[in-house]
Length: 589
Ligand code: IVH
Image 1 (cartoon, protein in one colour):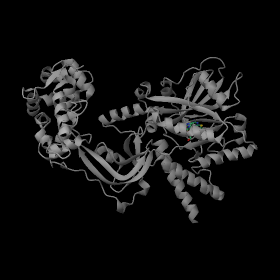
Image 2 (tube, helix red, strand yellow):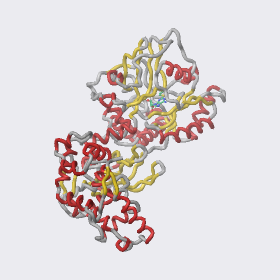
Image 3 (cartoon, helix red, strand yellow):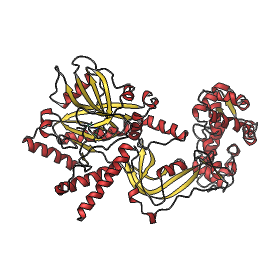
Image 4 (tube, protein in one colour):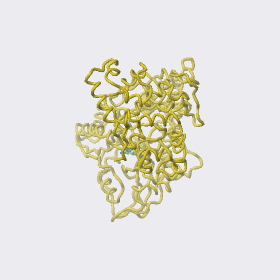
């Protein structure tokens, strides 16, 4: 076998494997960028060596197969994919080829967002939604009608006149980014698997039997065209006209759509899409440029995989590949130990990133992460960095090492307890310097006692120099102590002292939050303050009563109850209220 043949075969195997993980398992092993690049490489090789092209090559097939137990349905017309381009030159080339073919320099294009969700096909018979399906392999998809009927924005019946006998609508289901974060937070708290991105979450939800996610408006839908249409009253000349009619029928179509016959303007529209991208509550991964006239679309036709009349101009990926060189274990305020991935610095959406939280020990296992691995990092919602997967095919066994989970706290050497759902906790309590520092930082925070001027670095120094040990020691600070710390001069020292004095008049919810009771965030602190009115009532509350407070679950009730049964916590509170400090706690605002 010649070299190129075996290279192509390997590339095909890799792409098939990735497609299987992506489409079937909803658990991609590589970034979209890597997938697209490999697909493009294969396409170019096949173009050079058409003798090596096979009908089952990933460039010729669309999706892959699907879970056997899901009911399969045929689409009325195949659901194709799109060819991708990544730069201006390729766009100019796309335009040139079409203009040359038609021997004109006036081709009208319709520009739309490329939604990064799950493609679905909707069939309306005499105006009623009778079937919804995933793309599947492009010809046959999975029946998801029951779930789709629950998506509020997808009409069960078409509006107004011109109801066609049969209409096949194409569009994309997306999970909203804020809902995705919410869902992962819930899954994390319940020790369930986390979704790597909103698209996978949408794919999981749309096939799921748990209707909660769908009915609770986690999902959005936008249509971008029609598959087939049988009507005696209506036909379209252009894609634009088709979108306008979809809107009249009550089908959601995104407002971002532009017509232009000028490639410079199209580039401006592309930059407009790049600009609005961070402000959208769903992911887009590019802009789609479509020849508008349907007659011309027909003449251009399609390959087995994608139409020749449309192109996806992809954005620079928000994912980057890098190398993991260490995992550090960070001890939080409550002693919970969070593994932090340390990797070679990368830049995503303009920010330099070198660390990402791995959340808990389960996450290391779920990712199958090893030191020395090549990893894919993404910014969730364009902000929080997250390791999404390991690039397994790049793993060299002699170069990776198992990540050893610590048995003792890296800071105070106390024993680490690991819960059933793999949450690790340092048992050192207040003797642990990390917990000490974190609880003081939490105490002074804006939402807590709001002591301005004392930041993280000053607290580290005060604790490291044994000048303070507990949050209550903050109230004992004076100019003499503060001025022992480098970088604190008389002006800053005065500001801090004033701020400490000011913080002595606070509200019950802020004080409760500042105490740093496990699971007691701002909302729970407010609910407790409103329910009990005074600190004394909360200290004396029994478990049953705590359990009945709005949003307080069984676990949190136990944490609150135990906190106030702990002698040193009570001593701390008494000290704060004692005349020498004189903390005044008022009702919440
Ligand atoms: S047109 C035959 N328009 O991208 C034309 N597709 O990578 C095919 N997609 O399977 C689709 N936004 O699910 C079109 N505005 C848009 C789109 C879009 C997202 C998806 C679509 C397709 C995939 C191809």
